[in-house]
Image (cartoon, rainbow, N blue to C red; front, top):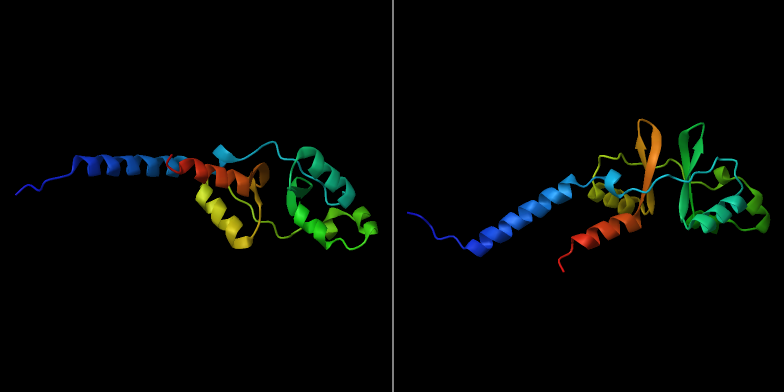
Length: 149
């Protein structure tokens, strides 16, 4: 005996499948920003603050000999207690170890990492090299765009 099927439900189901596949096909490399502004570990906190202001960034990777060694963000500036510390190198205040993500991973994986570790950005690394950066805002905009109108 053949059961009656609601055509509207079938259409909704197909739409969900299509959207699900679309989500699965979006990768970090589709959302990341590049080129990435970086600073060497010996850069002063003052120069780093100027770079963040000038570029409109809230944080940058710290790179030595083409290797990711840390991350410095505006949050790290809260550690400064005396004005003289602005002359200190970023290596004294940067976060280590640095979490990174690969370009083929999903926005959901990036969001989970950022929420779990309370961080605002992830360097995108391929074959040991930084090729981009994805921020909390990038992932939020992506998920916001998925919401129905």
